[in-house]
Length: 160
Image (cartoon, rainbow, N blue to C red; front, side):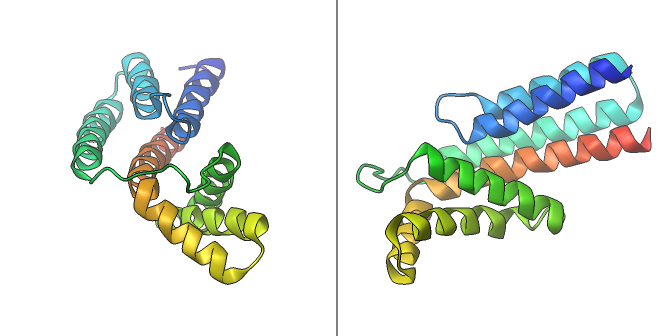
């Protein structure tokens, strides 16, 4: 696979990761489609193994999201700004502390956004906990899985 196609696959994967944070965008499926595109062009054992593992992981994540109890989100102050902060925190955490850093980065991004919006530690902490209980857990599970798939893809591209 040549460099322009790799960059396009990377762009699709990045859009998928960002799409996880935007309601209504099928981010997980964009990540899977980008990986499928790559595997169909590379046709190696590593590519097919990664596609099978990613498919299994993303299907398990969909089941886990479905099993998580729905919560009321009205009145929590969830904004697109908060999604940007949470996503940036997860991405930064994922890069600084590979894989496991995404979780504290995500939660830290929500806290920082709420701290800037509300002003005090106590109010920001309470709001962050309410947001994580309402929607944060399901978004975090999906985002973490997509980041793991993208990280594995990057590793496979570098190794090949």
